[in-house]
Length: 241
Image (cartoon, rainbow, N blue to C red; front, side, top):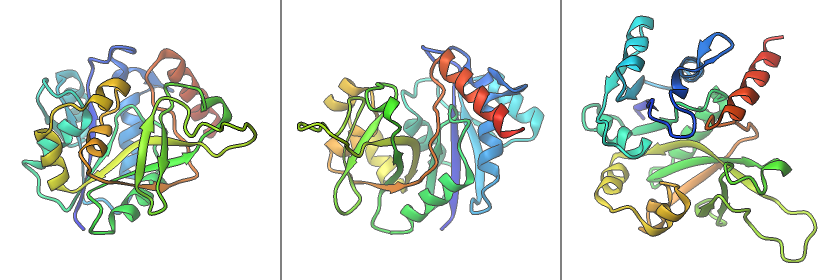
């Protein structure tokens, strides 16, 4: 499979403006993501897709492949779709640019999911820590026996009516797509569940496009707030000791 990894990166974040260029341990956030993705030898191509000239200038200065994309995109999936119109591949990976704890193992697990030619969209889950059960910033996922997603939510899923222990899985923001799924996604209107949860992947499920979910033991922290940035900074500093 020819596989292209796309790292969508924009500056216009509402909760943490300019987060892609915020420094963690002396390096911009986007640099941590790019370096981690580049460590996976299974990829044929890696590029950063952005609508910000500052990000593009940083990429060019460091010799990273970058492509300017439309400023009208509302999601990373739409940005990946634009890339897919110009670069031919069997699989397109969406490695979100605000995931500085991404690892080579995440990409390998995602590619394992996409080996099945019947899978149009793939993603990953990991066992959720107890503190994330009721954390609306930690998206949860429940899956069917065949590994396909039943639902994604910011609410705590599943609800255990009788109390006691329960298994909760956190969704990680990495995706694999085949081009027909990307083409279909951008033709569809924003779905009602997508709008309610602010989760773009629900557009696939509401339109009966299955999402296969692989599992990984490695959690991540998507950087959406100042607190997230500080947590990641501590984790990366500890890993370098």
